[in-house]
Every structure is written in structure tokens, then in C-alpha cells.
Image 1 (cartoon, helix red, strand yellow):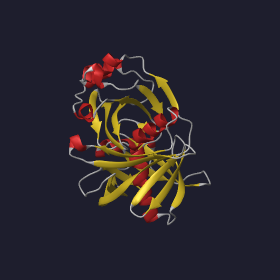
Image 2 (cartoon, rainbow, N blue to C red):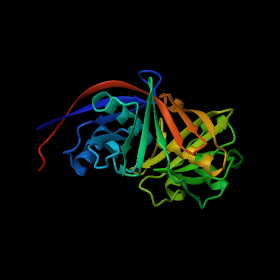
Image 3 (tube, rainbow, N blue to C red):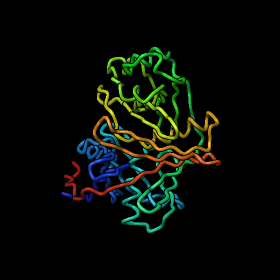
Image 4 (spheres, rainbow, N blue to C red):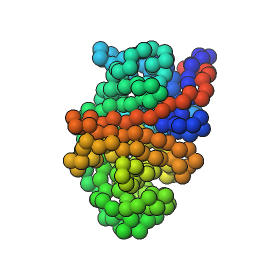
Amino acid sequence: MTACPFYLLNVFAETHFGGNPLAVFPYANDLTDRQMQLIARQFNLSETVFIQDSTIQSAVKKLRIFTPTVELPFAGHPTLGASFVIRHLFCQQDHYQLETLANLVEIQHRKSKISLILTCDVKSHEVNLSKADIASVLGLQEQDIAGIPVWVNTGTCHLLVQVSNRRAVKNCQVSTALFNQKLTTDFALKECYIWFEQQGQVNARMFFEQYGAVLEDPGTGSAAANLGGWYILQQKVPIQLAISQGDELGRPNRLSLQVDEQQRIWVGGNVIEVAKGEFILPPTP
């Protein structure tokens, strides 16, 4: 048996029982892909992140990010949570780079807040659905859909759906059958981000498919980054936003989003350590 140390964190948290839970394994060099996937399935969180040595000279570490079913090229809250552990164990700098399967990500620490900084081409494509179709998937009225829904990818792809008011965000009742039937994508996960912005305050929710069911994520940094990408595509930068997510789940998440004049996307939040221990890994058959 092998004892693998891990940390349990809440990311984008303002209180001990808020934020998005994350398991971080800081010493993962010797773990196989199958072992990492099985561990992520055991924890059954939105994501579990494994920290490995990077072969890229400019990167402090490499991140491997797993949901219970698949590996992701990039995700926001695992990157920030891993940064919290990396600063504690490996690196005392305030500014450094991490390697992900999608790209290199800059990290900045400022007091209790950690931010990731993306400099990348924003990819997007239209969704082949009408506003009425999208509304039916989300359990809303057609007039609740404000903008044209679009797939956006700055590392992980989300369907971004802008709605016309805060009530529409709160009232989303996703149809699992329609979600799986109408939302088609070549990406590993179907992920839909619903958002409303007013005077720099964003209310958001993110739904995704797993094992045929539609689940909700309490706090999604990669979707926030994609929202920043949307603002770049709309030529509405620089911009600074405060995002509230997870309130409907009883897990308030508070994210900051900034896109600067150089079109760099900053996503940040607080990280709170809630537990640490050892995962007992059986011998490889």
C-alpha cells in the first residue's frame, strides 16, 4: 500500500463552508493516468488535480486535472487550488507559470487572493439552436434569452447563454432529456454557462452532463475565463466584473474577472484549506 498525501480545499470561498471543493495531490509524479482517474472518481468532486514536475523550463509545475469521468485540458478552480498548495510546498514566489494540457497559465498571489492569467486566442463557434430551443432546455421563456448563445473556448469549452435578468438565472430548471438531445459538441463535456450582468455584477450558473445526468457546478473559473473571452470577441474590453455563482446550491462562490487592455484574462478568488490527509493506494495489479 502507498500513502498519497492530499489537501481538501474550498476555492472561490469567502467562508469555511462556501466555495467549490477540490482535492489536490501534490506529489503525483509516479501516479498513472488510470490511478489518477480512479482517485478522482473516488472523491467524486467536480475536479481533482494532481501536481507533477514540468518539463517546461518556465513552468514551476504541471497540472493534471480530472473529473470523475474524464481528464480536462484546463479548469479554473483546480488551477487556483493547486496554486495555493504549490505556494505552500514548492514555491515562495508571488508570480509564476504552471503547465496545463491546454497552455501555460500565469499565476499571481496578492495577499489572500490568487489569480490565474490567460493570454491565448479565444476560440468560438455558433450553436445550431434557436433562442426558443435554448430556452426550452433551460426551462425558460424565449424572451429570457438576451444574446446569441455561443460556444467559447479559452482552454475548456462552454456554451455561454446570456439572459435578460437575474430572475432568469435563478429560475433555470434544466431538462435533462433536452440538454442531452439538443446540446451537441465534440468536446469531452457538455457545459452550459448562464449569466446576467448589471453594473459590473454578474450572476451565473453552470450546468454540465455526467453519466447522462445534468449536474450544477458551484463555481467555474474556466467558464468565467470564457466570459472574459466573450467580452474580447465583443470588443468590450477592458472590463472588470464580480461574479456570484453557487448560491442556488447553498455553496456561495465569489469570483473576480478582469480583462485588461492587452486582452489578458484574469480570474481570481480566495482559497481556504479545510482538510488534509493520506489516500491509501493499493498496489498496481
